[in-house]
Length: 208
Image (cartoon, rainbow, N blue to C red; front, top):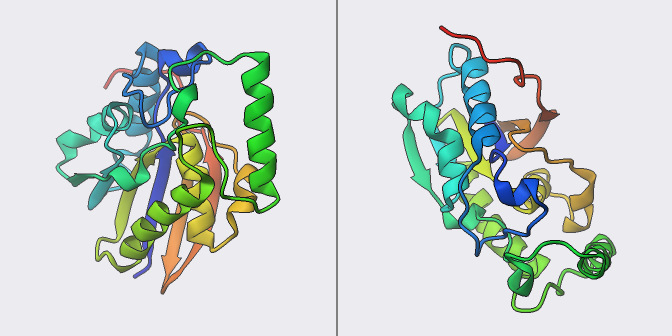
């Protein structure tokens, strides 16, 4: 039997809403919209999928995103290796024209294959690659067959590259929305993405 992995980004926070950098150093909570979208994801899939295992990052915003699933009784693990990238001196700061230019210049360098740069006092793409590679190597050998992963925007871009065995220069090819779903199937040691940034669960809440 193939292993199926559902990878989602956490729900919206006020930092997301207001354009403030979070990274791994800001442990923010979901806002009301973030909680609603997390609940919508749960309601859409609760009767369709039983997760043997849920892995979220060590940050509150991912734990809160998967919290509706706790009542279903899966094994739940927090793993720092899928925390968001550290953005160093930029964390907690609102984006400015200067910081956007700096961010774009760093991302452009990553897209050229130069992974050894990052924001001052933050991680480089090479640092991200190292911890995600360790996580993926263990994920390949896990016995659970249906897994939910909840992580972060940049971390998920790196994770998807790692799963596909793509260079991290391809990170920008992945769009990552809040509670956007990438459904991945593992066959042997290889992974194939079945759906990209699926937000079809974003429907009005109904009572049940």
